[in-house]
Length: 190
Figure: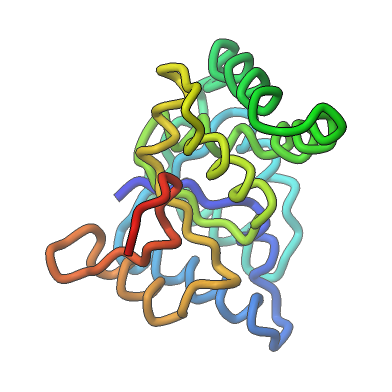
């Protein structure tokens, strides 16, 4: 399975004994153990190479050597998508909120582009950005490029149960794995 792993997960994989550090190490281990690939654009690769956490650099290098990094030589910037996303932010939020919300969204837009390029799963502990994109994916006014956001799954690691994340990374999308409702960007009724 192709996964987009936010650099915050990789940089959180430190030696500290905190819930997020422990969870990040487990996620990286499970990705490697289960032969998943990670989707990394050229822009993201530069960010990955700057990580200085306990586990991050060696994990990324191991993934590269194993041929399990996809897209690292591809510029995935989608100008049409970025433009549509900015318009959608303008239509969804009050005029006084647009600039702040766009700034929060713009810094992580590369993860959406990577997920739309290959695979459809983002693993991140970035809640604000996920919530903004969820709001946009669920508006009535929507373009084709924004509609594609509805196909993505966002595993928000702070709220997700460790056993759910492990199970998903071990089995993927199977009949036996029930996808937690909050992983969908398109809101669905329970």
